[in-house]
Amino acid sequence: MKSKVFFTNLHTGHGQNLLTKFEKLIIKAGIDNLSFENKFTAIKVHFGEPGNLAYIRPNYTKVLSDYVKSKKGRPFLTDCNTLYPGKRKNALEHLDTAYQNGFNPFVTGCNVIIGDGLKGTDETLVKIDMKHVKEAKIGHAIADSDIIISLNHFKGHVATGIGGAIKNIGMGCGSRAGKMEMHSSGKPTVITEKCRSCFTCLKSCAHDAIHEINGKAFINHTHCVGCGRCIGSCLFDAITPASDETNTILSEKIAEYTYAVLNGKQHFHISFVIDVSPYCDCHNFNDLPIVDDIGIFASSDPVALDKACADAVNEGRVIKGSMLEKNKKLKDYITTVNPKTNWIHSLEYACEIGLGSLEYDLISLDK
Image (spheres, rainbow, N blue to C red):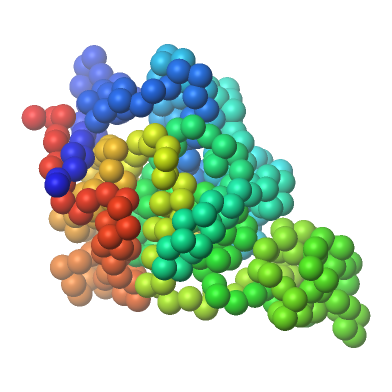
């Protein structure tokens, strides 16, 4: 059965602007089908890494949060801490980054809550018993919410091919241990050269897996359970997670985590196919977009939404001088930019586990 995906382009005129078009789009796409009254509504958005300017403008979150509040809902913006070193690896730096990039209550009209707490260890175990994941580790604040709205910047990704709704929800809502589970079947390791011998990690380990050897921290993988607490506690980015899963398994795990987040909850999804950078907003830089800006898409089906956005990118006009124009080899633009990925597999698997449909009807509001 085909799902409905709604679309509006970026053309405006007298009497309307992109913010009013955005509000019209989400209404037409069925956001009113959600029962918002007194419901905690998590608006899952990527706040952007400092130095990267491709993230969604916070002005759109104001329209969305105001609309939710007009329906007596209780919205908040959220994301979980990162697995890798950067400016979003703990809640304090994450909030600083969000505020720096304009995601603060004065601009957005609602508060920001980091979903997995101060050090990425505040999680809820969600039992799903799927092929790879038996118990998903979801940021506690997100698991506690009643409604999930994903607000996605659609772009490329070096491991999954695309960063859309499935990636934003699945990877983005995993706690630090959840992100480790998706990225790896292994355990974290101490980078000896970076270790300052403070042994904060040793004190944070609940499983007696970290010991001092020759004045440096060492992780015993026999005792390590892969919770990732040591990564969050290290003050000098001296502990690194393994990244040993294939991109195919990574994509499947992300889909399973998305299922864990959305199952049993009301949900709605919006994607901006604007500034389609080759890489994720997690990087502290963004390259020239690969295609012209296309527009905004919305749907209650995250799979159909991602498929519609990917199709639009692959039919888009290539930007001169972009990474795509310099390396164009395939009709599939997404795979050309990140050739070691298979973006369609993640959507096929998401469809297989019941997250949505690959078939869609695209309904334009601009006719």
